[in-house]
Image: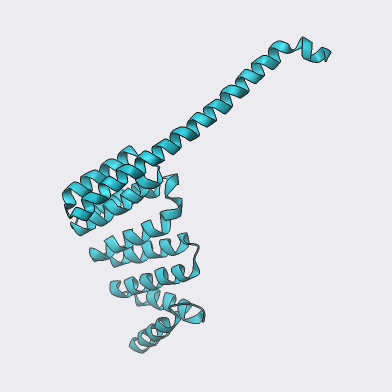
Length: 199
């Protein structure tokens, strides 16, 4: 008790600091929740532009969401939708650039596999099959679902084949064919047979 009486000033300061920290945390969380909510509303409005078919307006609206609400879930989703809109307009570099920016954000964590798969699709549309294969492999590494991993690896193998890299394709198809539980094992065995016979 005597210690408390002699250190009243220090205790009061410590309590004030603690209260300020708690208030700061509460304000930050409240601000983040408000930002996420506003981002979702803005994304919804931008999605209406996409649905209307006005791709130029949709791209502009989605770009605003990605810039204004960077590092939010809605901001990442807007970047993915923006990439699709850009790809539809044959603006592949811009679409991939939007995905690369979004991928670096911490809010992108649950979307990383999808982001890489979209990049791969953009590369495929340009005929850049090696880059597509690499992006599909990265998508496979990012997902937690075995069936999805196998599908992405099958896409990568097809992209390697389209690029003329039969060895990389055969390696992936062989890996997939050996897994009896794989959803693409049947196709993988057929592809291994085709590539081996062709070789």
